[in-house]
Image (cartoon, rainbow, N blue to C red; front, side, top):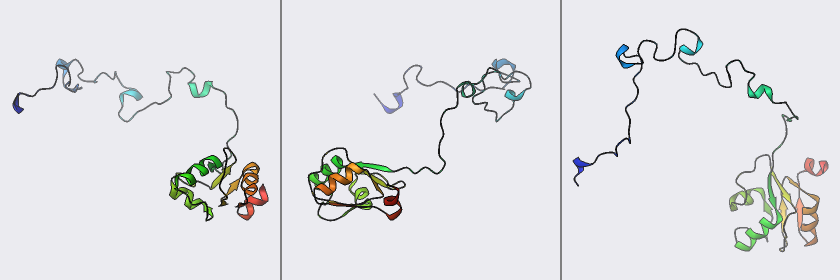
Length: 158
C-alpha cells in the first residue's frame, strides 16, 4: 500500500446537498422550504412549537417553588474526611478549613460554603472551620475532642 492508494471506505463520506442551485438539482428555487411563511425565511428556529398542538411545556402542570436566593452548599461527610486523613491528603492535627478541603480534592468548589454532615465514622480528633454542619456531625466531632467552628450568622440560624 502506498500513500496515494489510501481511500475512505465505500459510503464513508457523502457530498453535501447543495440546495437552491437550479431546477435540475431537485432542490432548486425554494430549496425545499415551500413558499413564503415564517419557516421559509432564514434564522427561524421554532423550538417547542408543535404545529399548533399544545406544546409539552404547557401541557405539564407547574409544581413547587424555587427560592431565588437559596444557598447551595458543597457537602462533606465525616466518613469522607476520615478517608482523606487516612490517605494523608488532609492533616487532622491542624484545623481543617474550607480551603484545605478544596486543596485536598475532597470538594471541587466551595459554592456558597461547605456543610459538614454526620454520615460515616470519624476516628481521628479533628477541628473544622466550615460554613455549616449538621447536629449529628457536631456531636460526632466533639465526642472525639474536636471542635466545629461556624460563622456567627450560621451558628445563630442552627
